[in-house]
Image 1 (tube, one colour):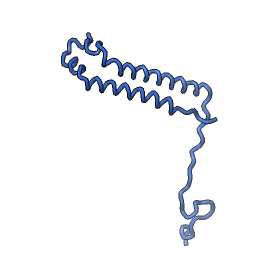
Image 2: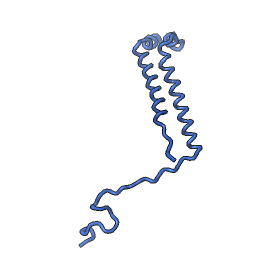
Image 3: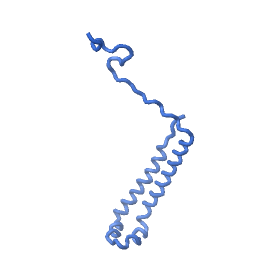
Image 4: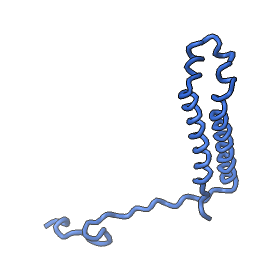
Length: 112
């Protein structure tokens, strides 16, 4: 007879069940890491709001079609003047605003 015929011996799992493995708890962030995370979140929200508002408003202004950068590319200028392209760019702006709001709502600090 060998030891495998007799089943588990000692403190092993009962009936060959799974063993629960719990990762060690995360260390609490110090106050500098906490403030760094908060400032990064504020910067991200600010940038997303600004870029989102610009992307929503800019395609519908005269500057969008009468742009000196695009004067040498009439086909690109004509393509950017289509309403569906303007709507697509504005939709990207709305998605950017949604990203900013969702990040602000989702942010949680680790419990004390």
